Image (cartoon, rainbow, N blue to C red):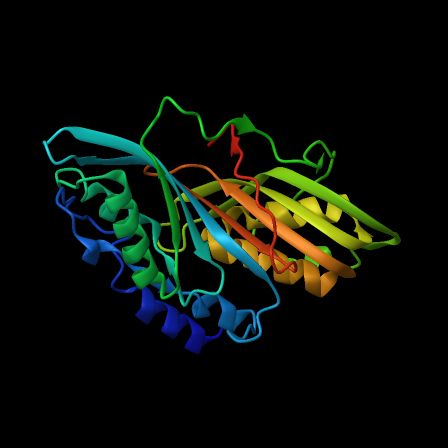
Length: 285
């Protein structure tokens, strides 16, 4: 990363609440939301905002949300949030949690009102329309435990000695046969860009093209283990590295990260303009 990129990153991240002692507010306050410019990571990857090589969304699941109805009775809900890949800003996760907490002692007349407020506030933060769906009827199960589809490559008996991100591990990853297949791993781990706290995840890679060497792919994924970057940025890096080193005609990278502070983040990036996304909660989520 160049010195100028590091400077731009430091400037952009200075005002974030992440990594700082923060007062938890219990009355609605949309000023708590903070965005991080997507350009920070994309400049390093030489990605232009008007010619991105992928489509997709950042899929968030909300598990801790409560407010008071007009009579002062608590309402609890879960939610699904979809932030478009081409928004100017990604939503910073700690600020999102602080913002959700601020609903706790505020009165709202309906679930629909809260849903609209969330959508409006998140859209303003991301600088792009954000879709929000709330479920306040917790007797209705809207998600189920499941697994990622495809071939699990975690049982490969490989020797690993690289725990710092190394795209060079993808050199000569393409084999001779052309295939369409889906691979996945539960061994993805990176660290928060600011706090260095561990982010645990699973990643699913669906592609068409020259078959990927599974051992090289797994070593590459493990090399994120000591890498500091936001969830969304890691997924975009995996996408770009695979497109650069593989001989692929289509690619979808989808990560499911474990929950922190009542939120999980699940970025998807794809060569497909309208990629399908299966919001199946994994056992660690």
